[in-house]
Amino acid sequence: MPNLNFHPAGRHFLQIPGPSPVPDRILRAISYPTIDHRGPEFGALGRQVLAGIKKIFKTEHPVVIYPASGTGAWEAALANTMSPGDAVLMYETGHFASLWKKMAERLGLEPEFIGLPGIEGWRRGVQADLIEQRLKADSAHRIKAVCVVHNETSTGVTTDIAVVRRAIDRVGHPALLMVDTISGLASADYRHDEWGVDVTISGSQKGLMLPPGISFNALSPKALAVSRAAKLPKAFWAWDEIVEMNATGYWPYTPNTNLLYGLAEAMDMLLEEGMDHVFARHQRLAAACREGVRAWGLEIQCVEEACHSPVLTGVMMPTGVDADQVRKLVYENFNMSLGAGLGKLKSRMFRIGHLGECNDLTLMATLSGCEMGLGLAGVPLQGSGVVAAMSYLQATARPVARHPAK
Ligand SMILES: *Cc1c(COP(=O)(O)O)cnc(C)c1O
Image (cartoon, rainbow, N blue to C red; front, side, top):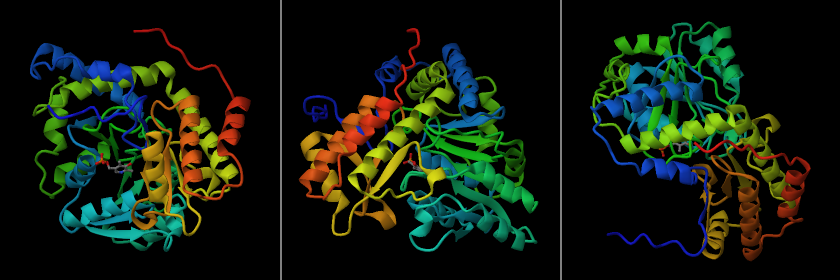
């Protein structure tokens, strides 16, 4: 047996922006016995999760569920729709956008990376006019897809996807719109059909409150049609066989049965609370977190008011302060994990996750840990972020949503 007794007293505060803490209700559901994936009970479970997940993506079209991390679903989106050498327009919002672009290169595509220069693009949402101009210049329609990240987890910046859709439509360009909402789904409002997205990519371990291990492609009829003629090799990821077998609640291979139990439970929790309540809860917690960061006198990575992420907040360090040192002190002394700065932001910022099942007191404990860690690191603070966030939460207090036990 591996030694799993590495947790000191009390619960560990897993305040990275994914994986997010898994609620007990979901852990219990996942612990049910694994069943025959060709048996009748499994078919009922499959039909239940495949129908339910459409409500989470807000789509009437198929959602493919893979036993893979989010990266697998990125690959699936490209492998199903693209042909070797296809040009794809990818927008640089941060580290995750950069990783997706690297994957497109490895798959033999020709990604073109656009965005604002330097670190500027990592502080703002997608500038849809840049996409519009680029597509307008592509009169030969060489560009086959526009790829954007909805909630850039490396920075804490969210993009208005409907605005990107309108930019593509204004120039009448036929490229597919592909959106990564791996960290946004189920914490930030998301509407696959209404926003005209062709392929939405998501994963289990962020807003859905599940452990890592399943991921998703939500499809549009156009994406399905394009996939029939697309020439990149695809086997495990191929939508056609999966969608066909999903019609009866089964998969062409052994799916992640226990995580599907967890998914069914997570969807019950989200729908019982009500998706709009879930989104409002996250917006309010994120606003309280920003009140805290501003009271410390520290800079927030996102500089566009309309684009602040409800999922996480990126906290910039004053020059000369190593953010990873602050994170280390918080981890060692207060048993809390914070997100590191990634890529261009390595050691310059840390990220506070407030996604998934986060509530008022989770956030208050998190900010307390941050404030004490900043103090230990000798970071000069203007005031108490804890007091500021607490005042905000008190002023906006509301009765918590309670639902009857199942
Ligand atoms: C977490 C994340 C990924 C990567 O997902 P994995 O499950 O780690 O493979 C990709 N994009 C975004 C925006 C993410 O937050």
